[in-house]
Image (cartoon, rainbow, N blue to C red; front, side):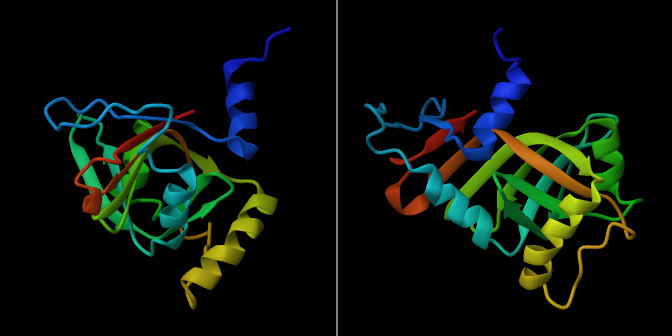
Length: 174
């Protein structure tokens, strides 16, 4: 019996690599990707997702308006995790529409992740996430009592390295 799409995607995220290709960017003069030549490796993106201190998260309001804000977070096991205040605009937007975009802090080595935010409620997972979060943002603590903790698993991601003048622009798809 064939696996459901979500089961297949979950197994890929636990250890598989996304498929790399060129983003669709007409007018930017991107070279064609020939068997991966010139594309950034996914490890390049993961390194930046792990090391970034600040991240930008874009959500959509109930009436369709955009909202962008800086958050702290951690990249753990192929997903981005962050928390926010229970009454924040981000939390309210994500409750109405969980689709979001997460970006690293350095635009010259940009990583852009599009995905769906899902609230993390399992105590074991929250405890696991507290270790890298507390190490990264000491003395702050990842405290779900203060507001929801979200997981964003990528559906598509983009990497853009400024020094290459867009010649290594990469899109990863799961």
